[in-house]
Image (cartoon, rainbow, N blue to C red; front, side):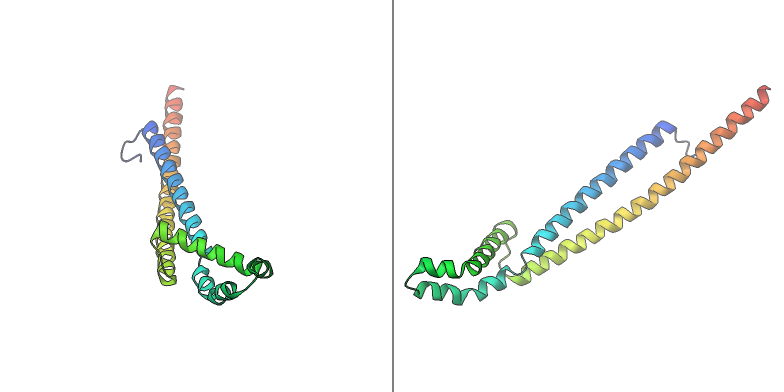
Length: 152
């Protein structure tokens, strides 16, 4: 920074921009992580829905549907959650099968890893800037010391 004749104000401005950029990276990473977590929780919805076929057929054939639902409450709850998740995936992501869901999660993880890599590069640049700032401060202190010595 000293070699490029950058003032302290410009250096502080650069540091603020850098901090803002890193904060934006962190927010984006959080969004990626949240979305991946949410989709990971839905991974089994297709299998649960498929395995519920016999439950629904038995329900349709039962004479006392209310009693059947009460006896199989947990299975119906899993079925309803799976159905809701499948509907959400279809509306939000146009995902209609398990392989598409896995592909989406994989793509999000790759994007997140790219962002993590970029954040690491920014952290290295931040360390370089801090070293340059320290160097510039040392040079200024030396110059001030020389001025004081000359004045004496």
